[in-house]
Image (cartoon, rainbow, N blue to C red; front, side, top):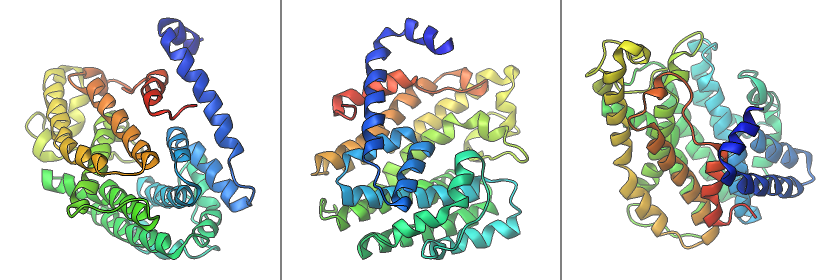
Length: 331
């Protein structure tokens, strides 16, 4: 009933939603018949429906590499995110994860719902990884190793300064940008600019900072232990404890802190535009541009919005799909 009310309130969403339904059906028909590839693409659709649509724009070989890359890092992120895993057990898993992707017998049960399925049946991801060309494998292994080490570092270290914040975001997202650039290069579709590492990193930082801002309430209310990624250097100007920002009596200071966080994220926009303007392959451009547009829309929704400290703030699905349309993602 709530969905019907939303459609009646926003009738312009109906057409993009119908196109999305067609796109999902088309994507499902493109899932390879082999069990391990079928698992990978089905799981990709479950853990990120929007990403599974955008990835369909890529050529098959590159699409397979990006699919595996995403699932490997999603699995790594599942280990990091599971606050029920004891630190002394979690650290060696994060540090050695890049070796586990070569082992089709390895799995580790953690996470919930579809993420638990991903971890329990990780051997399918490993099987798919081992079928990729060596250039793709090397890029995925390197980034997984660096990301796991970075995540392990911040398990034992809080985000205090803005430099800490940038370093954490580099490990969990900037490296994704670097890895994708390496995959694009390995595919022969793109060349890298001299400053490719900096601008690839910025692509990831902008998306990650948007997610960290948007997910404030979810992270601060995490059970059994809060997850705190906002840097103390920023929130410490407005509150004694980060969790204090969610209380109504602190609304004015909370919004001021939020706006400073959004402003910080926007410092990466110039690099993002430079990165995308250098892309030669239209399908890769679409693949990269859509998440950036979604992030800009999300930040616009978050800015000066006290509701971020009260509940979920996110773009309507119909609005997201409407933004996809100029890129011909949904056809």
